[in-house]
Length: 420
Image (tube, rainbow, N blue to C red; front, side, top):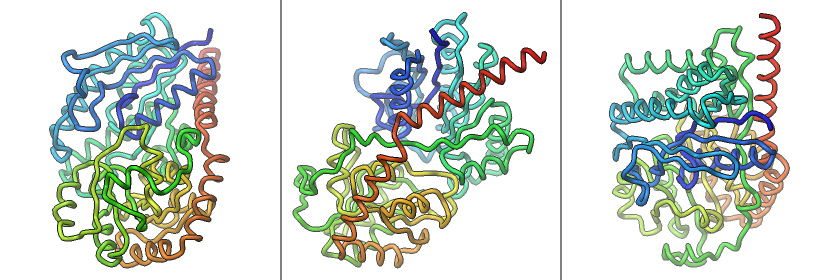
């Protein structure tokens, strides 16, 4: 039997975070390919930023599975995402304890084929690397969002010392890891620019994926519409994290301009309370929290048009995974995002929607109006998006790309031993 893979990640099923969905399915595909996997992650906490009911009372929980094991560690969550010091302390404590359990995942005397760690939080990069050195195996650092770039761009971090420390941790993590996996060419360019030339060959592009068997096109007249008090009128939807990176005030602006269209913000996050306050006088605005995973296809089907907005400067440091899910649901996309970045390329290649410049509410509203007023154009774009995800971003293809990287690192390790 081949050596096991150890996965160190901040979220894993049944946690509801998008990155948790990603790594859960990758692990499932590893198992389908015959791999044994040991996961070290957090206790479920993402939805309410508190440990979910039924999981409290213990610092860590371990369960054996048919394919390996899952160890869940207390994430030390804070209710406020805006308290950066509290979050940093929580991430640090989680990373330390998770790192200790990573040393023993699958048995301290059994050398893994690799340890894969996921960022954010950035601290897991060095945690995974240190564990890999002790266990004498390669380390793979998976970057879902480039930190601290997004936090700096949104003004969430302004302290120069914290920025300098984050930059140092980021650079060291990239240099030390045996491989760094990013989601797009934009992110590769970003990461390579922070690395010495002799380390840049370590950076690999492996896109995220969508489960097109689970998320399928459905009729627009869903039960979810009824729950939100919506009839047959057109619906423009944002589904995802409601934070300050997403420029969701443009949804409010568009709602004012398009009173015959219902605008739905589906999700939770640090900006939601403020947005709901500002939308108090808009009868065509609806807000709803995260829905269970089994309802995601229905939620996506509820929207006639979906939006992917990111503030200027963030398109090159983040690839919103919601884009793939929207396309799998056969719904058109209006994206407000930096030109020339990954989402713009996806929409251009697939024909699944249109892009406008970020932080331009007039252009955003005009693009939405054109899409809503041309139902046939939206339907055609949605079908093209569905066809694109079926052929480009399957979970199996993505998982095997990771296995290829791990295999290449094993070959390099053997060659290094022979040279030494």
